Length: 190
Image 1 (tube, rainbow, N blue to C red):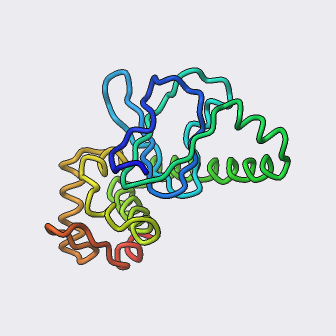
Image 2: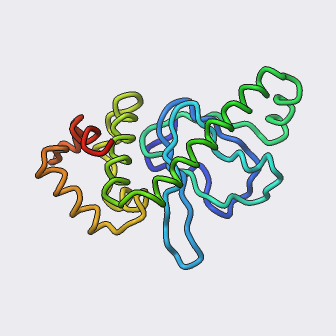
């Protein structure tokens, strides 16, 4: 069991394992040479992190950290490659997973390039709400505006402005108990 905020690996760490997220939510991020942090993906049960080791990468280009209590299984690169080689059905499932992830990454890139930061924030909140319902409701109590800014690609003050606007319109509620997302947010930003 990994606690919320646990670092699975850091950017620059040796890259020799694949991690299977059995339960929980993991943030995949990177930091530019100028020090700008960006969240690339929010991943959940059934997702893999560290697959770049299968291409021969020696160091991670990203960091992976848990957002809520999580369970992740570890497979060394060699063991994972043997598993794929010796079990064609597993290799086929892995290939299907890679195609699914490729499509998700493509959609995230399109979202980032085409949509306003307000719409990107709405989509991020909707995704986090889904993980809250399916995996761990504490995610909406622990997510910070700084993390949301990293996900959306904007500043924390801009996220704060949008969050206040969403609250005024009745799309969300937040207080000391945490954040609650209403279905009207998804309806407004479909």
